[in-house]
Length: 410
Image (cartoon, rainbow, N blue to C red; front, side, top):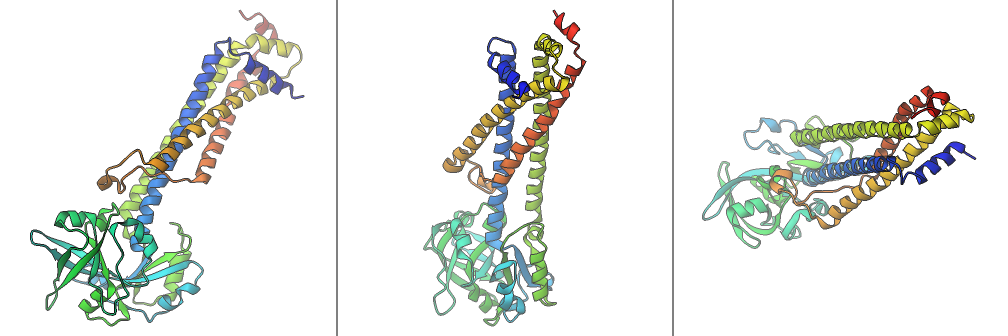
């Protein structure tokens, strides 16, 4: 029989008439609230990261490849000088170990004009190889462009922000003027409206047929503005994918990762991670000191019992284990309640979206939740281990208690 565990269980059962009952409840509540707060914070943080990254990937891919001299263009910095489809990268990307999809795109700057407003935008031309499944969740009205027509399609998809600003809706027509020599214009039919919450896209980008942009630039059917490439298992530290793109590319190609293209957004996400890490550290410190204080109270309340156990032959180690077991029992109770509260509130928000957000400032309409089970397990394991180690500190005082003094303790 584990005598220390047996005595610890007896102590726990007979706390209902002692002062330590209130103290233990405070300990359980503090651990539960701390853990619940951490789990909710991690769920929201991972939700923000996943939501924003999914949008960026759907709209720009993981790697963007353009002509190396594009930045010297007097027009928009995207895709003025073309790339050809007759490249090893375009033909052989499916044979690589990390690249999953490649789609051709091209950008053309222009001005949308209605009877009351004008607005400068960029027409993003896409083709049949465009990954529709990634983009469809952001279409809030209408449908996708029909690429089955023989000639270039006059259909476009605009953002809700542009639609509201120009007072346009699905099935409306709008003219777009392109500043070039000679100037040209096109009349487009709006077949869909999308909303991402990302200002970089919602304020500037409309989606159209790649063949329209090719015609405006007087390119051939094999010339495109660039490639948007998706990788199989994305990671910000992945260097293999970029290496394979460089190996299959040529001297004209300039690949850019999504982190480089949207550096401010990823820096903002990194700052959020730092804040959560600091928050986690503070909660662990508070919970640790709280457990030290509570265990000290429990030890001081049973000084005479400790003296009696030592007088009967119990070692310091055996007596220490009694209070360590009691502390761990409180920690586990707190963690059960903390997980129940934290994961329960996360599930409530995940399924009901009861907490809205200002989409213009936060890139989404509701507080997002992501289920990172490894992070949840890691937080629970870290809290349990750290507090278990911290519990060794207050039990050190037991080694200083002498039986003869403890039994006289008044």
